[in-house]
Image (cartoon, rainbow, N blue to C red):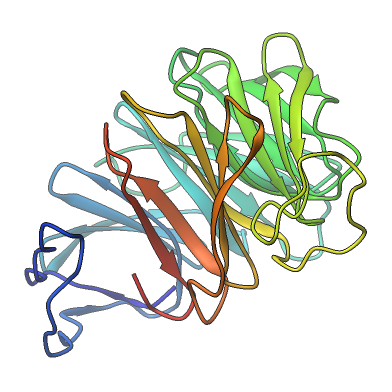
Length: 287
């Protein structure tokens, strides 16, 4: 992800979703290192930069949340007035779940040790108050109470298809999706700890039954998004190869594919609320 936070307006998309041609906008706020995660709260943009979370208000740095002794932060997540992040320490196994109060700059107010596997991704099921699901590089996932700093459950439904690379919460109660290093997406019930469906090569050609392919042209799954509102229930999966697969959750089958949507790994996916329109961003600096 680029190091700059832009503060100037960007062109509005046309009715058909196309963005008119425009000259590139120069960076207006340059941060010292690469941004690894980004979230927005009202007029405040929070960017994970190395072992810090930089809070930017328009064109100025408002403050810095620090994480002394940590190597890097990833997977920023906002819950109310708290911002959470996964932290890694150089040369140490596992990792930490760090918590700060937005606007109270300095070291974290809470640090919960994770491991021995390394945390890779983070998601918040909307109906789960004060709880997050954390994915790990051994294929497991854990349900944590962030206020108590306690692990409530370790999931096994996600094990068996490689490290977890990304997580997304569904609009349906208790349902989440986990994207793996092996190119699969596991749809699972967080309450019952049960796999509901597995989509192999989810970001590539697609195969709706486990073991249907031994390779994954789409590569590891790097981004996930559920559709919301009326219309077909869809799950989009982006991969390291730059392609996007769109899956019908009612049919448990591939509904469409966008091969080579990006020239590099897909970094993010977003369905517009209540609309069948999908936005993607990639490591090729394209949207």
